[in-house]
Image (cartoon, rainbow, N blue to C red):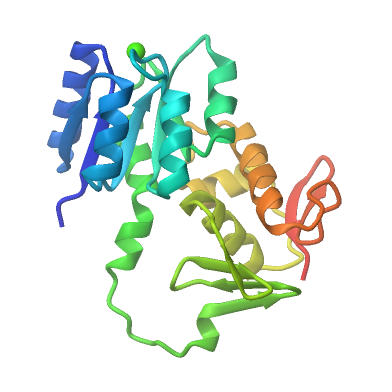
Amino acid sequence: MDRTILIIEDEEHINEILTVQLSNAGYKTISAFDGIKGLEMALNENPDLILLDVMLPGMDGNEVCRKVREKSNVPIIMLTAREDEVDKVLGLELGADDYITKPYSTRELTARVKANLRRSAIDNIPQTQNTGDLNTIMSGELTINVERYEVSKNGKVIDITLREFELLKFLAMQPDKIFSREKLLENVWGYEYYGDVRTVDVTVRRLREKIEDDPSMPKYIITKRGVGYYFNK
Ligand code: CA
């Protein structure tokens, strides 16, 4: 099962380094060197994951991210410069799943890629039990189908990214238990050393906008001030 990763990065030497590192890690890669071509490949080549630089000629990475998200829930990891704190949060707001700060280590890159590809790996596990109810979490107006990666509210399917889904699933499977942002980063994002806890806050905010009637008065994902978040059963 060769996973294909689309690299959208205009700096040729960085694009090449990414290609080599990912190939060495066992992935197939395809490359674009500007935003417009990158968007076209993202929509037509069906990659399993996209590495997306922010500063790009033609169309910037944030715009590419926004446009890809209108059509696809493919995992997107943004590549940001160290000084651009704003880019990170903006990218996440626009629907990116994660970001890597340049310069990054090979270990960090492969850890992030692996963590963000986890859904596909889970999808490939043969189903030993398919008992319907066990795979569905219901709470209030929400139905979370764990196997199909689907959330619906009042029977209507909600458009949700992988990361949003995994966060919701993780919290909903242990209702009323409070998790710190660090704990959520470790369990939902799947890495221990590189994460920024703001990633959790932004993802919670995006999730609330999708599942809550009033995101400022959440009923499902509740903030416990100074501690973390929990799912309200
Ligand atoms: Ca660039």
